[in-house]
Length: 140
Image: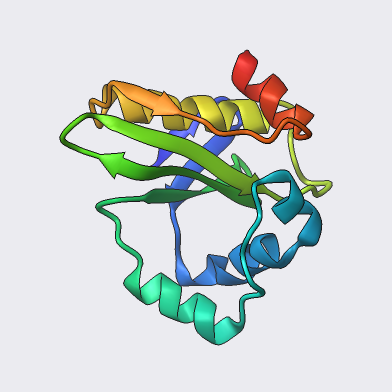
C-alpha cells in the first residue's frame, strides 16, 4: 500500500533505497539530531539489515516527493499490537529537491495510517531538546 498525503508519498523500502538509508545513518549531523547512537554502517551490514528486519515490530517507509525524489524515511517503531501503541520517528535528508511541507505531510500521513488503518491508540515521539525542527513539526 502506498500512502499519499499532500506533497508526500510513503512507500515500502526497496533495494534501491539502501544507499539513501546508509547515508542517513552515517551522517553525523542527522545522528546528533535524532538520538544517534549508531555505529557506522557498511554496505554489507545494510544489506543484511534489509534482508532480516522484522516488519511485525517496526514499520519503516521511504518518504518521497510526488515526483519520486526520496528524501528519507518515516517509521513506527516498537509496535505493540496488544496495547495498540508505537513510537514515531524518522530521518530526513536535506536536499534541494524537497518540497515545502513534505515533512509535515509525511508525518501526518504516517499518523493517519497508524490510527485509521492499523487501529493504534497511542503514538509517542521522543525528540531531543536541541532538535527544534522536529519539535515544531510535532507540535502542529
